Image 1: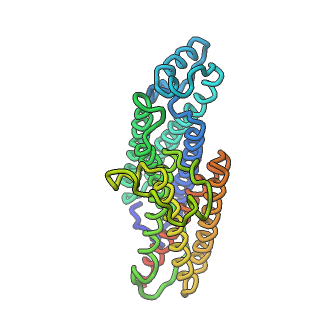
Image 2 (image 1 turned 120 degrees about the vertical axis):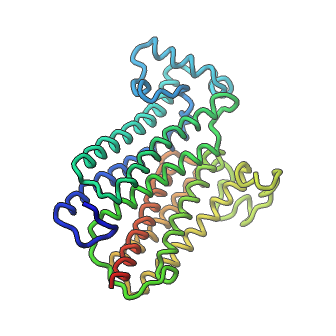
Length: 362
Protein backbone atom coordinates (compact mmCIF):
# COMPACT_ATOMS: atom_id res chain seq x y z
CA UNK A 1 0.00 0.00 0.00
CA UNK A 2 2.63 2.51 -1.13
CA UNK A 3 0.61 5.50 -2.28
CA UNK A 4 1.76 9.11 -2.66
CA UNK A 5 0.18 12.20 -1.17
CA UNK A 6 -3.25 13.05 -2.56
CA UNK A 7 -3.29 10.09 -4.95
CA UNK A 8 -6.65 9.63 -6.65
CA UNK A 9 -5.74 6.16 -7.89
CA UNK A 10 -6.61 4.17 -4.79
CA UNK A 11 -8.29 0.82 -4.33
CA UNK A 12 -11.36 0.36 -2.15
CA UNK A 13 -9.16 -1.24 0.51
CA UNK A 14 -6.71 1.67 0.41
CA UNK A 15 -9.56 4.12 0.87
CA UNK A 16 -10.94 2.09 3.78
CA UNK A 17 -7.52 2.00 5.47
CA UNK A 18 -7.09 5.72 5.01
CA UNK A 19 -10.54 6.45 6.40
CA UNK A 20 -9.85 4.39 9.54
CA UNK A 21 -6.53 6.08 10.18
CA UNK A 22 -8.01 9.49 9.50
CA UNK A 23 -10.72 8.95 12.13
CA UNK A 24 -8.05 7.75 14.56
CA UNK A 25 -5.82 10.80 13.96
CA UNK A 26 -8.75 13.22 14.28
CA UNK A 27 -9.70 11.58 17.58
CA UNK A 28 -6.13 12.11 18.83
CA UNK A 29 -6.40 15.75 17.75
CA UNK A 30 -9.61 16.07 19.77
CA UNK A 31 -7.85 14.59 22.81
CA UNK A 32 -4.97 17.05 22.39
CA UNK A 33 -7.48 19.91 22.26
CA UNK A 34 -9.03 18.60 25.49
CA UNK A 35 -5.53 18.30 26.96
CA UNK A 36 -4.80 21.94 26.15
CA UNK A 37 -8.07 23.06 27.75
CA UNK A 38 -7.45 20.99 30.89
CA UNK A 39 -3.91 22.35 30.99
CA UNK A 40 -5.34 25.86 30.85
CA UNK A 41 -7.65 25.09 33.75
CA UNK A 42 -4.70 23.64 35.67
CA UNK A 43 -2.83 26.87 35.09
CA UNK A 44 -5.75 29.12 36.06
CA UNK A 45 -6.38 27.21 39.28
CA UNK A 46 -2.63 27.21 40.04
CA UNK A 47 -2.76 23.43 40.33
CA UNK A 48 0.26 22.55 38.23
CA UNK A 49 2.71 22.22 41.12
CA UNK A 50 0.47 20.10 43.34
CA UNK A 51 2.21 16.87 42.25
CA UNK A 52 5.90 17.28 42.93
CA UNK A 53 7.21 14.06 41.38
CA UNK A 54 7.25 12.59 37.90
CA UNK A 55 6.13 8.97 37.92
CA UNK A 56 5.09 8.11 34.34
CA UNK A 57 3.70 4.67 35.30
CA UNK A 58 3.00 4.61 39.05
CA UNK A 59 1.70 8.19 38.95
CA UNK A 60 -1.39 7.05 37.07
CA UNK A 61 -2.76 5.75 40.37
CA UNK A 62 -3.94 8.57 42.66
CA UNK A 63 -3.73 8.41 46.48
CA UNK A 64 -6.16 5.75 47.69
CA UNK A 65 -5.92 6.07 51.46
CA UNK A 66 -5.74 8.80 54.08
CA UNK A 67 -2.06 7.98 54.64
CA UNK A 68 -1.25 8.37 50.94
CA UNK A 69 -3.09 11.69 50.78
CA UNK A 70 -1.17 12.94 53.80
CA UNK A 71 2.11 11.85 52.24
CA UNK A 72 1.30 13.66 48.99
CA UNK A 73 0.27 16.79 50.87
CA UNK A 74 3.50 16.78 52.90
CA UNK A 75 5.53 16.72 49.69
CA UNK A 76 3.60 19.76 48.43
CA UNK A 77 4.30 21.58 51.70
CA UNK A 78 8.03 21.47 50.95
CA UNK A 79 7.89 23.68 47.84
CA UNK A 80 7.88 27.51 47.75
CA UNK A 81 4.34 27.78 46.36
CA UNK A 82 2.89 26.33 49.54
CA UNK A 83 5.22 28.20 51.88
CA UNK A 84 4.75 31.59 50.25
CA UNK A 85 1.23 31.46 48.83
CA UNK A 86 -0.79 28.61 50.31
CA UNK A 87 0.46 28.13 53.85
CA UNK A 88 -2.40 26.93 56.00
CA UNK A 89 -4.18 25.21 53.12
CA UNK A 90 -6.37 22.34 54.27
CA UNK A 91 -6.17 18.82 52.92
CA UNK A 92 -9.50 19.20 51.15
CA UNK A 93 -8.24 22.38 49.45
CA UNK A 94 -5.10 20.53 48.41
CA UNK A 95 -7.19 17.73 46.91
CA UNK A 96 -9.01 20.26 44.74
CA UNK A 97 -5.81 21.39 43.02
CA UNK A 98 -4.32 17.88 43.03
CA UNK A 99 -7.16 16.47 40.95
CA UNK A 100 -6.69 19.08 38.23
CA UNK A 101 -3.02 18.24 37.82
CA UNK A 102 -3.60 14.50 38.13
CA UNK A 103 -6.33 14.67 35.47
CA UNK A 104 -4.03 16.64 33.18
CA UNK A 105 -1.28 14.05 33.51
CA UNK A 106 -3.71 11.15 33.17
CA UNK A 107 -5.08 12.60 29.95
CA UNK A 108 -1.52 12.77 28.63
CA UNK A 109 -1.09 9.06 29.37
CA UNK A 110 -4.43 8.29 27.71
CA UNK A 111 -3.35 10.14 24.56
CA UNK A 112 -0.13 8.12 24.50
CA UNK A 113 -2.02 4.83 24.74
CA UNK A 114 -4.66 5.83 22.20
CA UNK A 115 -1.90 6.72 19.78
CA UNK A 116 0.48 3.80 20.36
CA UNK A 117 -1.95 0.86 20.47
CA UNK A 118 -3.84 1.69 17.23
CA UNK A 119 -0.53 2.53 15.57
CA UNK A 120 0.78 -0.96 16.32
CA UNK A 121 -2.52 -2.46 15.15
CA UNK A 122 -2.58 -0.57 11.83
CA UNK A 123 1.11 -1.23 11.26
CA UNK A 124 0.87 -4.98 11.96
CA UNK A 125 -2.08 -5.30 9.57
CA UNK A 126 -0.19 -3.57 6.76
CA UNK A 127 -2.56 -0.61 6.70
CA UNK A 128 0.11 2.08 7.02
CA UNK A 129 1.56 3.39 3.75
CA UNK A 130 5.34 3.54 3.43
CA UNK A 131 5.29 7.35 3.21
CA UNK A 132 3.18 7.56 6.37
CA UNK A 133 5.27 5.26 8.61
CA UNK A 134 8.16 7.65 9.37
CA UNK A 135 5.72 10.51 9.88
CA UNK A 136 3.76 8.59 12.49
CA UNK A 137 6.99 7.61 14.24
CA UNK A 138 7.94 11.29 14.36
CA UNK A 139 4.52 12.08 15.87
CA UNK A 140 4.97 9.37 18.52
CA UNK A 141 8.44 10.65 19.47
CA UNK A 142 7.14 14.22 19.58
CA UNK A 143 4.39 13.09 21.96
CA UNK A 144 6.95 11.44 24.23
CA UNK A 145 9.08 14.57 24.14
CA UNK A 146 6.01 16.58 25.12
CA UNK A 147 5.62 14.51 28.28
CA UNK A 148 9.25 15.18 29.22
CA UNK A 149 8.79 18.89 28.50
CA UNK A 150 5.78 18.90 30.81
CA UNK A 151 7.86 17.65 33.71
CA UNK A 152 10.71 20.03 32.77
CA UNK A 153 8.15 22.83 33.04
CA UNK A 154 6.81 21.67 36.42
CA UNK A 155 10.33 21.25 37.80
CA UNK A 156 11.00 24.95 37.17
CA UNK A 157 8.48 25.84 39.89
CA UNK A 158 9.58 23.46 42.61
CA UNK A 159 12.70 25.18 43.96
CA UNK A 160 13.03 28.97 43.70
CA UNK A 161 9.66 30.00 42.27
CA UNK A 162 5.98 29.90 43.21
CA UNK A 163 4.94 29.13 39.64
CA UNK A 164 6.44 27.60 36.52
CA UNK A 165 8.75 29.40 34.12
CA UNK A 166 6.83 31.25 31.41
CA UNK A 167 9.52 30.17 28.95
CA UNK A 168 8.97 26.49 29.68
CA UNK A 169 5.20 26.94 29.70
CA UNK A 170 5.43 28.52 26.24
CA UNK A 171 7.54 25.63 24.95
CA UNK A 172 5.12 23.10 26.46
CA UNK A 173 2.05 24.65 24.85
CA UNK A 174 3.84 25.25 21.55
CA UNK A 175 4.93 21.64 21.19
CA UNK A 176 1.37 20.47 21.96
CA UNK A 177 0.01 22.78 19.25
CA UNK A 178 2.68 21.73 16.74
CA UNK A 179 1.78 18.09 17.38
CA UNK A 180 -1.92 18.94 16.94
CA UNK A 181 -1.24 20.72 13.65
CA UNK A 182 1.02 17.91 12.41
CA UNK A 183 -1.54 15.18 13.12
CA UNK A 184 -4.37 17.27 11.69
CA UNK A 185 -2.33 17.76 8.54
CA UNK A 186 -1.72 14.01 8.21
CA UNK A 187 -5.44 13.43 8.69
CA UNK A 188 -6.05 15.99 5.94
CA UNK A 189 -3.68 14.18 3.62
CA UNK A 190 -5.57 10.94 4.21
CA UNK A 191 -8.95 12.49 3.46
CA UNK A 192 -10.60 11.46 0.22
CA UNK A 193 -11.23 14.65 -1.72
CA UNK A 194 -12.64 15.46 -5.13
CA UNK A 195 -10.22 16.81 -7.70
CA UNK A 196 -9.63 20.53 -7.15
CA UNK A 197 -9.21 21.79 -10.67
CA UNK A 198 -6.72 24.55 -11.25
CA UNK A 199 -4.98 25.45 -14.49
CA UNK A 200 -1.38 26.45 -13.88
CA UNK A 201 0.20 26.96 -10.52
CA UNK A 202 2.36 29.57 -8.85
CA UNK A 203 3.06 29.02 -5.16
CA UNK A 204 3.27 32.76 -4.44
CA UNK A 205 0.24 33.70 -6.51
CA UNK A 206 -2.10 30.88 -5.61
CA UNK A 207 -2.21 31.04 -1.84
CA UNK A 208 -0.15 28.09 -0.59
CA UNK A 209 2.77 30.20 0.59
CA UNK A 210 0.36 32.48 2.44
CA UNK A 211 -1.46 29.49 3.95
CA UNK A 212 1.78 28.19 5.42
CA UNK A 213 2.48 31.69 6.72
CA UNK A 214 -0.89 31.85 8.48
CA UNK A 215 -0.25 28.49 10.18
CA UNK A 216 3.14 29.77 11.35
CA UNK A 217 1.58 33.01 12.59
CA UNK A 218 -1.12 31.13 14.52
CA UNK A 219 1.56 28.97 16.19
CA UNK A 220 3.57 32.09 17.05
CA UNK A 221 0.47 33.69 18.55
CA UNK A 222 -0.11 30.59 20.66
CA UNK A 223 3.47 30.86 21.91
CA UNK A 224 2.84 34.51 22.85
CA UNK A 225 -0.42 33.54 24.53
CA UNK A 226 1.50 31.11 26.71
CA UNK A 227 3.85 33.92 27.76
CA UNK A 228 0.79 36.00 28.66
CA UNK A 229 -0.54 33.12 30.77
CA UNK A 230 2.83 32.42 32.37
CA UNK A 231 3.23 36.04 33.50
CA UNK A 232 -0.47 36.51 34.39
CA UNK A 233 -0.36 39.42 31.95
CA UNK A 234 -4.08 39.06 31.29
CA UNK A 235 -4.77 40.39 34.79
CA UNK A 236 -3.27 43.77 33.84
CA UNK A 237 -4.27 46.53 31.39
CA UNK A 238 -7.84 45.25 31.22
CA UNK A 239 -9.11 47.74 28.66
CA UNK A 240 -9.60 47.58 24.90
CA UNK A 241 -8.83 48.87 22.31
CA UNK A 242 -6.63 51.24 24.31
CA UNK A 243 -3.92 49.82 26.53
CA UNK A 244 -2.99 51.94 29.53
CA UNK A 245 -4.93 54.76 27.84
CA UNK A 246 -2.92 54.58 24.60
CA UNK A 247 -2.78 52.64 21.36
CA UNK A 248 0.96 52.14 21.86
CA UNK A 249 1.63 52.44 25.59
CA UNK A 250 4.81 53.85 27.04
CA UNK A 251 6.92 51.51 29.12
CA UNK A 252 7.38 48.77 26.54
CA UNK A 253 11.17 48.83 26.88
CA UNK A 254 11.78 49.60 30.54
CA UNK A 255 13.80 46.44 31.18
CA UNK A 256 17.44 45.90 30.31
CA UNK A 257 18.73 44.37 28.12
CA UNK A 258 16.08 45.53 25.65
CA UNK A 259 15.27 42.09 24.26
CA UNK A 260 14.17 40.70 27.63
CA UNK A 261 11.09 42.95 27.46
CA UNK A 262 9.59 40.64 24.83
CA UNK A 263 9.57 37.77 27.32
CA UNK A 264 9.40 39.25 30.84
CA UNK A 265 7.85 42.72 30.64
CA UNK A 266 4.14 42.19 31.36
CA UNK A 267 3.13 45.24 29.32
CA UNK A 268 5.18 44.24 26.28
CA UNK A 269 4.05 40.61 26.44
CA UNK A 270 0.40 41.60 26.38
CA UNK A 271 0.99 44.30 23.75
CA UNK A 272 2.69 41.96 21.31
CA UNK A 273 -0.08 39.38 21.79
CA UNK A 274 -2.58 42.09 20.82
CA UNK A 275 -0.57 43.20 17.79
CA UNK A 276 -0.08 39.71 16.39
CA UNK A 277 -3.83 39.15 16.78
CA UNK A 278 -4.47 42.17 14.55
CA UNK A 279 -1.86 40.94 12.07
CA UNK A 280 -3.54 37.53 11.97
CA UNK A 281 -6.95 39.03 11.27
CA UNK A 282 -5.52 41.08 8.39
CA UNK A 283 -3.60 38.10 6.95
CA UNK A 284 -6.59 35.76 7.15
CA UNK A 285 -9.00 38.23 5.59
CA UNK A 286 -6.62 39.22 2.80
CA UNK A 287 -5.96 35.63 1.80
CA UNK A 288 -9.56 34.54 2.22
CA UNK A 289 -10.86 37.39 0.05
CA UNK A 290 -8.24 36.51 -2.55
CA UNK A 291 -9.32 32.87 -2.61
CA UNK A 292 -13.01 33.70 -2.68
CA UNK A 293 -12.66 36.17 -5.55
CA UNK A 294 -10.70 33.72 -7.69
CA UNK A 295 -11.99 30.88 -9.82
CA UNK A 296 -11.52 28.34 -7.03
CA UNK A 297 -13.44 25.28 -5.89
CA UNK A 298 -16.31 25.72 -3.45
CA UNK A 299 -14.68 23.60 -0.72
CA UNK A 300 -11.70 25.94 -0.65
CA UNK A 301 -13.89 29.03 -0.50
CA UNK A 302 -15.98 27.54 2.30
CA UNK A 303 -12.92 26.79 4.41
CA UNK A 304 -11.65 30.34 3.83
CA UNK A 305 -15.03 31.66 4.99
CA UNK A 306 -14.98 29.50 8.13
CA UNK A 307 -11.44 30.63 8.90
CA UNK A 308 -12.54 34.27 8.77
CA UNK A 309 -15.47 33.53 11.08
CA UNK A 310 -13.24 31.63 13.49
CA UNK A 311 -10.59 34.35 13.71
CA UNK A 312 -13.27 36.98 14.47
CA UNK A 313 -14.75 34.78 17.21
CA UNK A 314 -11.27 34.21 18.60
CA UNK A 315 -10.54 37.94 18.79
CA UNK A 316 -13.90 38.51 20.47
CA UNK A 317 -13.14 35.81 23.05
CA UNK A 318 -9.73 37.33 23.66
CA UNK A 319 -11.21 40.78 24.26
CA UNK A 320 -13.96 39.61 26.63
CA UNK A 321 -11.44 37.45 28.50
CA UNK A 322 -9.22 40.49 28.98
CA UNK A 323 -12.08 42.81 29.98
CA UNK A 324 -13.35 40.24 32.50
CA UNK A 325 -9.87 39.79 34.03
CA UNK A 326 -9.54 36.19 32.79
CA UNK A 327 -12.62 34.34 34.06
CA UNK A 328 -12.07 30.62 33.61
CA UNK A 329 -14.94 29.94 31.19
CA UNK A 330 -13.92 32.69 28.77
CA UNK A 331 -10.22 31.91 29.05
CA UNK A 332 -10.73 28.22 28.29
CA UNK A 333 -13.06 29.02 25.39
CA UNK A 334 -10.38 31.36 24.04
CA UNK A 335 -7.78 28.62 24.33
CA UNK A 336 -9.96 25.98 22.66
CA UNK A 337 -10.91 28.35 19.85
CA UNK A 338 -7.23 28.95 19.15
CA UNK A 339 -6.83 25.30 18.17
CA UNK A 340 -9.95 25.45 16.01
CA UNK A 341 -8.40 28.40 14.16
CA UNK A 342 -5.20 26.37 13.83
CA UNK A 343 -7.13 23.39 12.44
CA UNK A 344 -8.86 25.54 9.81
CA UNK A 345 -5.53 27.10 8.84
CA UNK A 346 -4.00 23.64 8.43
CA UNK A 347 -7.03 22.52 6.40
CA UNK A 348 -6.41 25.45 4.08
CA UNK A 349 -2.87 24.19 3.51
CA UNK A 350 -4.20 20.71 2.75
CA UNK A 351 -6.73 22.03 0.24
CA UNK A 352 -4.19 24.21 -1.53
CA UNK A 353 -1.72 21.33 -1.62
CA UNK A 354 -4.45 19.22 -3.20
CA UNK A 355 -5.15 21.95 -5.74
CA UNK A 356 -1.46 22.19 -6.52
CA UNK A 357 -1.17 18.44 -7.13
CA UNK A 358 -4.17 18.56 -9.49
CA UNK A 359 -2.68 21.48 -11.41
CA UNK A 360 0.71 19.81 -11.79
CA UNK A 361 -0.89 16.62 -13.11
CA UNK A 362 -3.00 18.45 -15.68
